Image (cartoon, protein in one colour):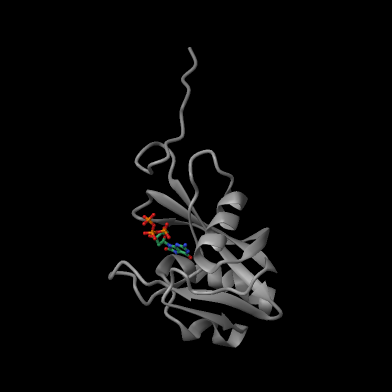
Length: 142
Ligand SMILES: Nc1nc2c([nH]c(=O)n2[C@H]2C[C@H](O)[C@@H](COP(=O)(O)OP(=O)(O)OP(=O)(O)O)O2)c(=O)[nH]1
């Protein structure tokens, strides 16, 4: 008998929820964003993005999140760095390189945005899950 394992969208099922982030690269700089909420992570820096909705591709989720959070259209490129477990393993963070296609990023949901050069990557306090991803980003903008 075959057992069908269904993927759950709420992160408490068999498969972890996927969170995608966009490392938007322009020239030799990458866009970093400071979280505005919740208080536990406010002021920590991340890549714009969020949870992939059920039935949505990771690329489509990134395009949607960049529109919602930054007011821009992006083109999604290659994965950057490892898939990092977050939230006690209930979710996994995957970051993709991205390019701006239209618009100038605005902090619609973040406290602050900054374009960082490779030498400035360590100047902001990243969320812990982002640290290995930021390391993998270095050769792409260095
Ligand atoms: N977007 C994004 N989230 C990250 C990164 N690194 C990291 O640990 N996270 C965490 C922070 C959040 O707990 C979660 C992202 O979910 P989210 O951005 O949809 O969180 P949220 O609380 O604003 O969303 P919601 O539950 O209100 O819908 O992943 C990152 O680089 N980008």
